[in-house]
Amino acid sequence: MTRSGQEYLESLRDGRSVWLDGERVRDVTRHPAFRNTAGSIARLYDLAHDSAHTPVLTRDGVHRAFAVPRDYGDLVARRQAYKVWAESSFGFLGRTPDYMAGGAAGFAAAPGVFTTEGFDGAANALAYHRRLAEGDLYPTFTITNPQAAPTPFDAAGGTAADDPVVRVVAEKDGGIVVSGAKMIGTAAVFGNEVVVGTIEPLAPRDVDRAVCFSIPVDTPGLTFVSRVSYEGRARSVFDNPLSSRFDENDALLVCDEVFVPWESVLTYRNVDASFGMWWRTPAYVNFVHQAATRFWTKLEFLAGLAILLTRSNGTYELPPVTQAIGRLLGKVAQAKAFVLAAEASYEEVDGGRGGVMPGKDISYAQRIMAGELYPAAVQEIKLLAGGGVIQLPASGEDLLHPELGPVVARYLRAPGQSSEERIKLLKLAWDALGSEFASRHEQYERFYHGAPHVYLMQQAWEGDTASCERLARACLDGYALGGEPEGPDSR
Ligand SMILES: Cc1cc2nc3c(=O)[nH]c(=O)nc-3n(C[C@H](O)[C@H](O)[C@H](O)COP(=O)(O)OP(=O)(O)OC[C@H]3O[C@@H](n4cnc5c(N)ncnc54)[C@H](O)[C@@H]3O)c2cc1C
Image (cartoon, rainbow, N blue to C red):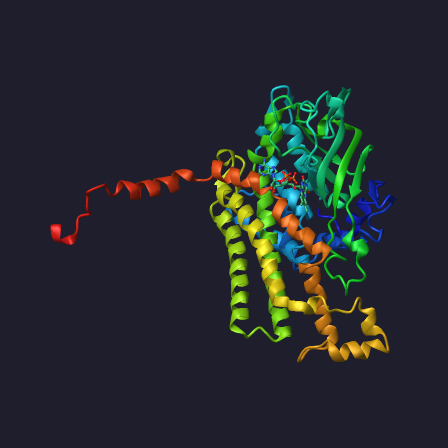
């Protein structure tokens, strides 16, 4: 059965080691830097118990994101579930539990990838998926090495012991011991289990780093160093409506001699499987299915914001402004089209034994579109917004003040809109477009799928170059020097 929001919140009170500002956070559900976001996630769990959403979000008591899709209809049903949760945060919570749930379903669809010489992780991958689905657990992942981490073997005099990246340091009875760090654990402090692995291709000698496992967030020796909390800095929900409630946080994951039982190990000292588990199973494509649905939702929200802003500013009817709104709506349609097209071009997994997944080519291309489109959309709306988003009272307290409130009310308003309504709208717009939280979102949309230099190369290597070349070649082959096409007169 799916958990209630309250059950989810209780699961976070487990003594996990989360640090912020030099302080160990005792309880993320109560700490001012995390509690509202924990509450927003709890509401996602409650939605599954709301009769209006239960049939969309669950099947047979399990969230649809955990299901291995068997046909096109299952993909559509999964997307409809993704959409309900995405709308709950207007697209600003990227790593809701359904993200890695899809990854786990991807592992379960192609467990053979985990069977390698020396270690067979297939049963563990299936058990991982089952454990999450049955417990309705919140999985997250850290699969990126800390930026600029030196490769110990390349550094003069370096040894494996100097390696700052998560690696195997010992084998013990019943499991392995790992040490090192990974970035960036988005929402990891709100999860129940975290996958630690690598999505980067490794050199054959990097076998110590070639390990992937999933462990509970309260595992001894596991520490999360949180980035600055936008929620913690937020003045109030009125002043910072998004950052105060949807700050999923990003944390550095540090393992200090963490013991990982064999049952939790998915790949072990195998370079090929540690990389291939993301690409030769539907895991990554399933990630994109969730992310593309959320992205489409976020753009719908931003376009809606642009409409409300320009109406409030009295500029909506100006042709260049209306055209800009048209351009934004075109971008929304583009984002939606990627989701629908990836579903319609679904592919069989493992000859159909692993069900289906959204089409790879279009899913991979979504990363290129979204990474370029998001910053452009934000710039477009900022241009439409003008200075009103800056010229705002520091907080809602100014509006409530008996002396100052009427002054603000008199000067900051728009035709047909009270000052409170207009200030509320402008503060929401700035939180979405210009705040530190907004800036993090721009970076997120650009990088969470990986860096452009990686995914552009991958698109070129794995994209359908043959069809494109064939068509260009057919045109070239249709004429020759000195030859003229046969016209109707020659018949
Ligand atoms: C907000 C946010 C949330 C994230 N959440 C997660 C998460 O939950 N889990 C997780 O595992 N990861 C997460 N990531 C990490 C993300 O996967 C990485 O940021 C991404 O893979 C890029 O890697 P990098 O940051 O090391 O950048 P780099 O690889 O260092 O690239 C940065 C830039 O350097 C240049 N560059 C570097 N190398 C080359 C090259 N070989 N050729 C050409 N140009 C190059 C390019 O300009 C590139 O854009 C998150 C990232 C962000 C920003």
